[in-house]
Figure (tube, rainbow, N blue to C red):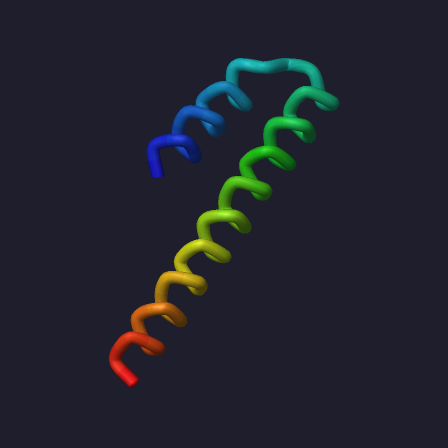
Length: 50
């Protein structure tokens, strides 16, 4: 994931602990959203096959 790499790079460049935590939270939210979308797509494909 390109976004994860960009946010990871930003995190290494940031010295503030609060900023790193905020970036990590944003990164986690993006990953959770992506997983939810993937699960939803798999369900739709199963419904179409059945």
